[in-house]
Image (cartoon, rainbow, N blue to C red; front, side, top):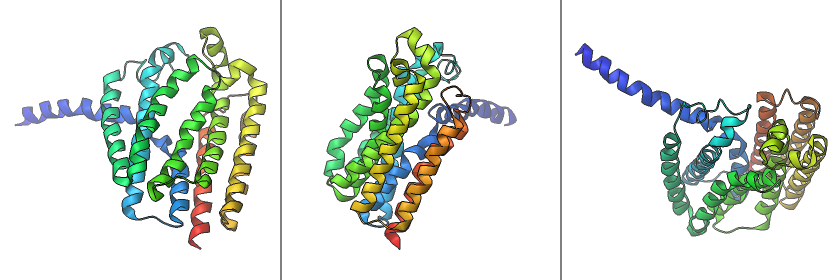
Length: 297
């Protein structure tokens, strides 16, 4: 019996390890980037807290869609990642995982996403293939256009409008304005993040804002996008008559985005790591909290 237990244990260990590696490979913890803005759209569409069923379906749809997008990014870019000094130790180029280890869960997540969209309403279901297509196509963009950083922003910007549709079954201009804000915010931090790869992009012929315009100009563009994002948020607050908590959240978000440029500078990208990522996660979370408090008080 003891021998059987040992053999069984040996069979389970690789599977458990692959599960852990899978979540690490897709940076599952970074779902916090997109989820808060999706929840913001959901709360605004509900004018309060939605039903538990809607909340769970939207959460499932968002997490599963993000998983598909991250898998597409990792699998499609695996050969690029293998020769990029910054990414060569990722799970696929390092041989820790095989492409199939990511593709199978991504297929399952696609099914979950389509099912969740179907359960929400007809419009959500009809638009779901478009959302998945955008997520899969995005990784190819850096091969053809410097606007790839901005395209990432628009990919993430699907979230709040999609959540709004999930609640109301229709799309209005208010969530579109919120999506503009998200697109500018996400595009801004992606431009800065890829400044790290400017030399690699230039030598390999890949495209980014940094490789097109240089690091200094990229920082200026990033700042402009952050201002656009904040203006859109403020405009949304006035348009929807949101309360003081929402605008307090906008002020805190402004401070956080300003601090981002204290943390990283054109001549010093050394802090473009966990702290930088956390700042951007805090921005979306603060806006969510400000929105939630505004609509329930």
